[in-house]
Length: 198
Image (cartoon, rainbow, N blue to C red; front, side):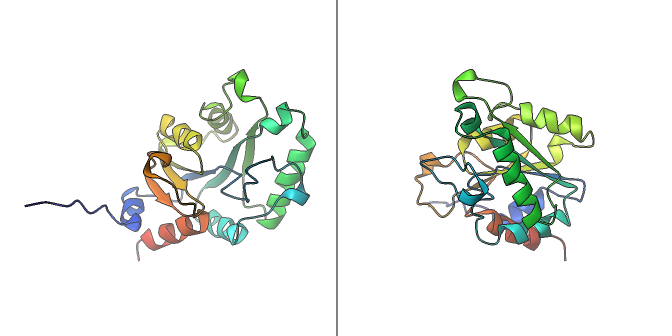
């Protein structure tokens, strides 16, 4: 007789994490907060487009999580395609749209070939965040990202990991070993809210 394993429902997975209001939510930027342009870098506010519902979702999530932090690789700076100030302008735009719901933005401006410690999947940005926010317990944190490097970053630090597919038809080998896979940040938020005790 064949026995088939039924994977647990997403809400059951999240409820097992036993999240409480002391937890930290880490978010990648491109592909999680805003549309990923794929063939070029988002270099200005004019090129920046939120994924649908994301500003409101971030505001709602901030009511529960102790802090929300953005960690993003931005080698467009290292390539000379944009400046730090261009990036800060985008961060301010995000803050305005989310009613200052994000507690901190951390970025790596270096080229991939530099192999710096702050570029995901390396953990430098998380260490910077823990210096700025000493209360962070990385074992009580979630990393939401749309790339294998995001998931590896979270795994190295003992975080729970959420991979978002952006509704793209990915092959199984293209999906990194995250704890949870969902379409986007709004879907994760729905799963999260539904997992809370009644």
